[in-house]
Length: 262
Image 1 (cartoon, rainbow, N blue to C red):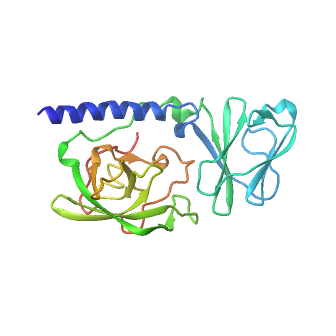
Image 2 (image 1 turned 45 degrees about the vertical axis):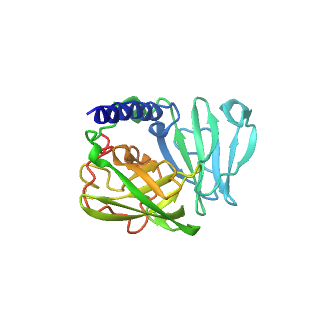
Image 3 (image 1 turned 90 degrees about the horizontal axis):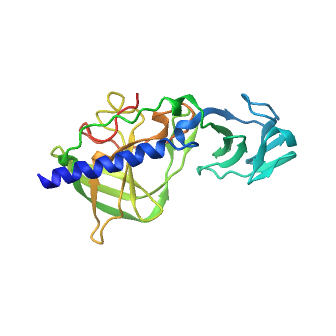
């Protein structure tokens, strides 16, 4: 009984921290626009100045009074911004807003982050399934000889993503053996990105993701599905989330972790 209580208490603390992170002024819930650039300098939404794609980066042109700055330096003329494919974007300050310049493959876009945005303003928490110890299992991680860059689709039609996969993990759930391709993290942890029988029903149709700690020396890894997370695209239409790797489908409904946001 004590372990069950501890599990629930630990989860409650973790979940509160997760929701606090989502309330960040320039976090995922602050997004109010996504604009794909081309080579022509254009004005977008209510942003000052003009913006265009240029040789894998972007150029922003603004006047001194537009309240636009890059790395704390006000823009008065044209400044080039260099985003990296698949990584968080370079931030351009526009008053209290942040315009994130992102690169996805050969495409460059602006993602507007507004601390007064409507999604952030109405956020009332993330619904989740009840915590249950039966969703905590031990998996066995098998690393590949070398990490592999894999190709996956994204929630944006025609746009691909190329994460690094590091191996597979096997575990038993609902009496059935599961095997998932796993993505690597910065500190040796694993990320399980999958769909299951709840996807598109009680959970987001594009799948969810579960970060784990780094595997033990024998390859064993604790998998706590109570901590399965929604990706940003479940909260906003302005994200470019990847879909799970091919074949990453858990064969039983995972009624654990976060549900589809309201």
